[in-house]
Length: 152
Image (tube, rainbow, N blue to C red):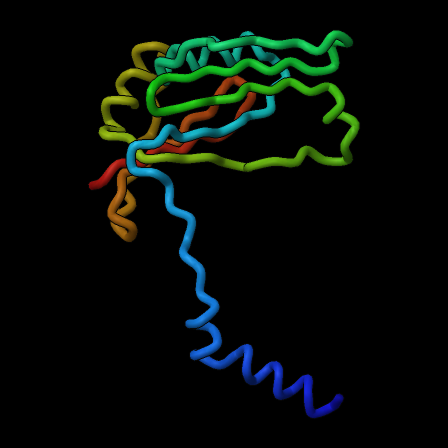
């Protein structure tokens, strides 16, 4: 038994074994719709913000019979956003979920101008020369971070 475990570790760590077991990475579809879900306390404010800034349409808005949760689905051709209020989540010791979500857009500067026009807030666009991209971080009414990027 003492010989089997070290031998197994050597075989598993060898480049040949690793190459044989390599699996393809998950790649987003080039023309597919992007998706994210965001947990909020004020669904109506989130619906207004996402529909105005991202050009989404409200597909449906569902509330549990008990009122414990509400989910609104918003979408356009390229993006699907699920806005979730779940009072049951408040019972957790700390909120769970994604700290930030991001995706590529054609022109970060144009979106920054739209944000300025719609909200009066001037968002900060940052050139990330190290990664060859221009970044814009937006916060929805609940403080969730949406990071947009376009090539420099």
